[in-house]
Structure formats: structure tokens, C-alpha cells
Image 1: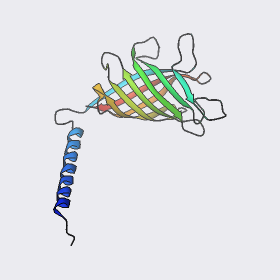
Image 2: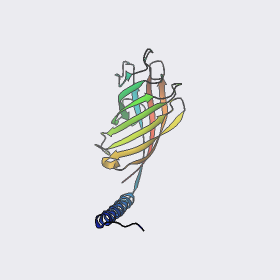
Image 3: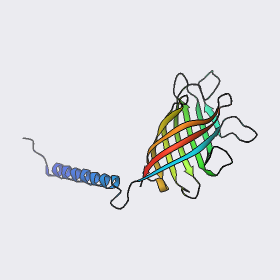
Image 4: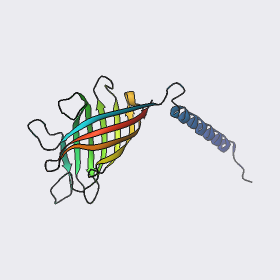
Length: 189
């Protein structure tokens, strides 16, 4: 039978107590801490993503890196874009602005069909002003509808989890301009 020193036993007892406290803390957070209930929010909005300027729109998306010795394009493997896109209540760019989408995406498919997205929705409208929702996932842009994960949030969306579906409401491939319809299902405290 193995013998343990007093300091080893004390360390193991302390380690077990810390693990029990963390487990209890995580269970309380998962259940809302005893006084917060899990909420479900569903929302729909439109993201205006413009790589080529028009009379009505300024550029909100730029390619910042790409595959060496090739023309950089959003549909080319290895291209990296940064964006600051408007979020609106309706497809019309003149409709009420709800906030901005700040983020990056990189084309991660050899055939150019997949954009890996990392997006922060920064809300400025009255209902969610100052709150954020963080999105991450594979946007398989050639599919009619695709899903990405909601991985976090702040403010009204603290500890957010859920999913978002994306549909191309308007798509101009030659100019790389798009309006995306986002449908979010958000669970938060």
C-alpha cells in the first residue's frame, strides 16, 4: 500500500474541494444561478455586405489577404475578408438600422464554396442597445440556407448559445455584394 505524506493528503483534499466547488458553480450557472431563468429570443434581420461600391452603398467589406500569385476574390480558397456591415430590420437598406456586424471570414474550401465566419453583432437599437451576439461557423455560401453557431454574447445576451440560419436575400456574384437574411434562435440569461 502506498504511503502519502501529510502535505500530499492535504493537497489532494484541497484539490477535491476545489473540483467540487467548480462543479457546484458550473451547475448554478447552468441553472441560471438560482434566480435567473433561461430565456429564448428569436430575431430576424438583414446584413448588407458590400465589396463593390454602388450609388447607394459604400464598401463595407474588404479583402485583406489572399492566395499568393492569384487574383484575390471572396470565392477563392485562402481569401480573408474584414467587414463592418449594417444590420437592418428589413431587406431595404433604408429600413431601421439595428446595429452593425463586425468580423472576418476566410474562404476555407479548396473549391471556394465555404467561408469560415467569426462575427460580432453589435446592437444599437433601443431593445438591445450595447448588447452583442458572437457567431462562428462554416457559411457554405452556395447552399440556399445554412447554419452557424451562436457561441457567446454580452449585455442582454450574456452567456448566449444557439444557432443562426443564413439565406442570401440578394446576391450579386460579379460585384461580391450581398444582402443576407439572418434568423437567430438565442438562449441566454
